[in-house]
Length: 186
Image (tube, rainbow, N blue to C red; front, top):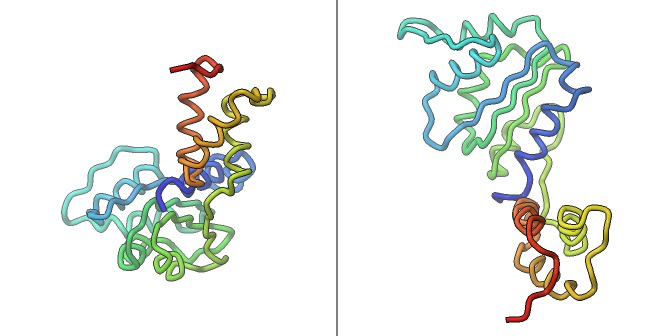
């Protein structure tokens, strides 16, 4: 489901200092529903090599990428995969996931996650419970302070409307955080 925190979680793992120090190479690639395999492999290659190379038609980008990754410990994020064929196409150039290398994928499709499963079970993110949504909202809006009693009913209504989606709670809290924190009479 969009807004459940898949990308946020992947981003936090990808950028964690302990995680990033474990890998020789890291690359992040966002995949659209309609994608060009060669172009995406070029993007991954360019992230891996920190370059902006353009490949001619007769160059096998997958093979070039495989050579760059061979013998290295890599972390590749494939963000927003929609089908199993895309997974198969994009992971073909990666050497066997050895030496602690990993591929993280985000997807809305459980079938894709199960198909791609290698070293661990897919993580199925759930919606936030009301208490968790409230805690997130209160922390983002009021910091270490508590929500004033006069705003509790408004806060509860806001949380109900967020429907447990962390991204929505965070976005709404960001807007509210910049506003005056008192109930207005209409």
